[in-house]
Length: 608
Image 1 (cartoon, rainbow, N blue to C red):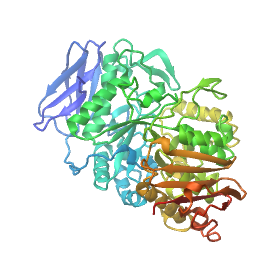
Image 2: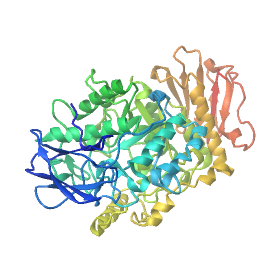
Image 3: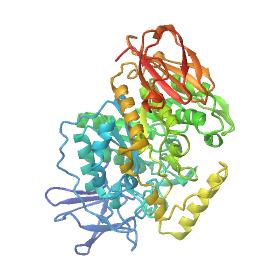
């Protein structure tokens, strides 16, 4: 049974404080507002200190004092109004929701939109984001994925430096603002995915070591010590992070969690943490009467991640498929070759469509070893694909989006390649209209030595990728402000054209039976040249078919139309869509060879 931690305030004004500190002898609850008082807490056999106090109200602030005189915020704080170094504040977990009829959307129907809360709008808050939901819904977006919002140092950060996993960032609007945003999303038919980080905590303001052995030297991560999921005292660590996942799902009505870099989470125990988490989420699904999803980011290319628990897997609902991005991007963006040296062949893109993992046991130069296992045969709904995300954009020296590297015709090809794929698609905020503002890495740490280390680390990272430009200063507020979306662009000119193109692709995806079929037995890719291919998809009953021909090159390509598609009608053509020179290919396939225009995509189907 999961033990609840934090300060749980009841409707009767009685508050139960619980904190895990198994190696500590004493624990004092130090209430500092509205009046100061210190209360000794009682320890149980599992190492949990607790105390129940009457007449506690919203807004009371407190610290804990473990074995001494120094006070620390609650490691399970629900709100940090003064940031990571300030006191924790009492909140009410109950909320009057307006989404009683919401039961979540089937994951296979998700059209995901990843966003960073601070740069999604000019104001950069949960409440400000509500005003943009109608724009997303009109585009066809039905799920937003919010980059981590757990309390981090300062007011601007990507979120992966969070140190209070239970506390929604105060500068975004805290717990109250997040609940209003989720409520509004559900009332507009939009699911909410929250990005959570269970592989490390940030360095500034991290008070967990002051309480318990949350970390271990047994394993290392790129961020330092690993979290202790399988060593002495790990039961409380597992409880803490599993309880955190349930907290977001139950009390904030989050629909899915995206688990960051699960390959940097180490557990060699008999009951793996991911299985433990999965089982508790399944129990919560039954309790709440609706579906919740767990989505993995994994660098392992291991199908075990998304196989069921019964089949010996970890039971994740889906995982990000980086190989699709790498395969497509290297064929379109010349600069991408330096970053993804093991990609660049059109055969790899074909394999990404039909199999999933491109590296499935082959020798990979970037890793100096054979890498991955085959995911052929796994349903496409087990993978999430993208042309851009926060990592692929932000982890470049200039923070440049695809918009800064390829032209509008190529952007249309990339959008079609994504949205016509047999996978769950994800767009990065602004991608739908060709936003050209950078998305750079930014921080607001207070520790000058830490700031300097981040600057040096970024420079070193880009040296190996042959970037000649100096990265934007991550500490500068100007770097953060430059990364904000320019929403006014979406309504005119080339941006409106790109937006309309994405809208039509999303609408087609939602209605065409062939595109809605995730069974990869009905996916075929025909390679025409090293820059041109045809994607053939069918519905499960084979009554509906779709043929998309992509020419990413700079020359016209002749393609002999397949016999199975004779009589099919053209439903999309980016050349005529851009009104460059009218229709470039016939409206109906008649068995004759087609001349496929340079940098174009044309789509035929036997369904309207």
